[in-house]
Length: 388
Image (cartoon, rainbow, N blue to C red):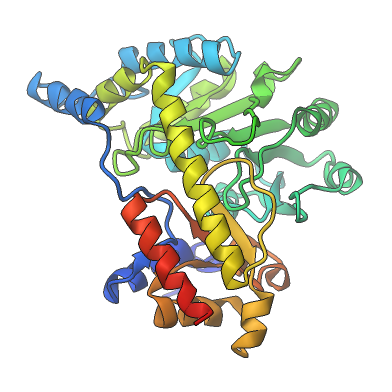
């Protein structure tokens, strides 16, 4: 019996695998991007209230009216996007489902999807599962910039979409207005869709601000904006995400979503609607914590011999390990990640997980710093074993 060739064409998530390895040895998990500190009490209480109010059965398949209305209000204020909550928002089981449902909703055989690399590792398999062909454009350190001519040459009559993740996982890059305007011009010229994963939109540093490509001229009807409660509200286990698109695209996203998961958890949707009403000081506290965490881990990594690049958002460092790999006679990123767990008890993600061209990431690993100060201080202490 021959099983699915499609499913065999990609591997299980390396990020989640590194978490299991870390847990098996009792290490510190700086691989998978979830907080280890408590969710805010008012957010947890909102979920408890919804459960106790018996919001425990199916919601409307494409999302609670309360949550869709709250999202529409928030994106108008923060993202400068006008949205009809009745026809342009689909609530999904996390941004992960939103991405796959979006691709399944817009792709036809022979279509191509452009992906920036290094990329979040789900994008490649998502494109394969949707039946499209992926084309990769490299972001180059130290500022993680792309070559404008290379990107223009990647667009053609088969280009259906381009995936943009800003702020970016794993690099921390925040796409500039100039870059987004250039992408928008290409999307309009080639009648392509911009699929923008904005899950880290509130985590930016150094006066950098997130810009939604859907807010740019002529992009509202050719953009799918994907987001989630996971990172902003430190509830990665809740699995409440959403996709915002014009009615024509939304109708198809909702159809795919309906037959994929039926709906997201009802009480948690009501709790996320509460989150949408949080005041600016919540977001300032979030940014301040991650800003200080970034600076602390940055200094610890530099002290230990890692080469770091510019990062203005999200909560990751994709670092160059040449100096340490040479010092310890290590040949590739997987061997180095294994060495780090053995030497320091800290789990990272091998850099090749984020590239289709494995030669580009084999001297890199990714650290995340969405952790409590106890974890961060202990991480700094353990990392210094590399220079003892």
